[in-house]
Image (cartoon, rainbow, N blue to C red):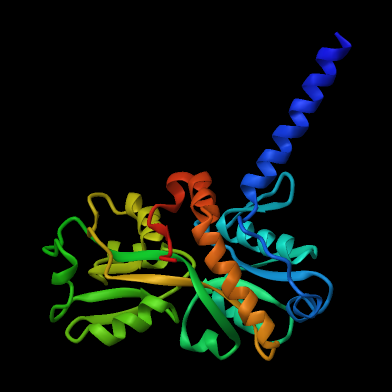
Length: 274
């Protein structure tokens, strides 16, 4: 009986070790001490987490963040060999201000011009597919039909997809709405004050039940790149390490496994091409 109990404990330990190995990025490389100090000058890695459900959710019972962005932040800190501090933000503006104030070391966020003024970017880690939600009575059936005279498109303000749409839309009218929630867009479409809603697929899927008969147009007109971002004016070793980390978590399957754990809630979130 004692031997059986001991074997059970050994098996449990081995299982825990195996799970940790699966969770960690493959091909981890040692990082020089000067790079550690440059990436985490306070002795811990302060990672900004944008709190939208396809990026992160909070388990309030245990006070823990879960999702692809917390997974990436924890993996980066684990590889660097320092504790991680995951800092929550309700919108991208808060992340920008935190970098400007020296309160963040890293994040994983969409690439836009105003954000690039506050942080430097490494490679893209995940992509967010974007398309349009149209009401039941809309004559629009394909993405290619969206740019037409008189059509009013709601687009999240100061977002990567807004920047892209302003380059390609010449006939339809773009109207800004909040980036972090679909509520405003749903209300405007329901009131007949807008004709389409552009956002990433997970956000459109969350809005669809509140607009009976509405349709998400198939395909993606733009894959929003979500890249590793880090504080400006850090030594070149930080850029080199951020690049190595981003490429490894894609190639090793780490990002794919994180997205798989999140399930259907992250439909439209895909691993960026290595």
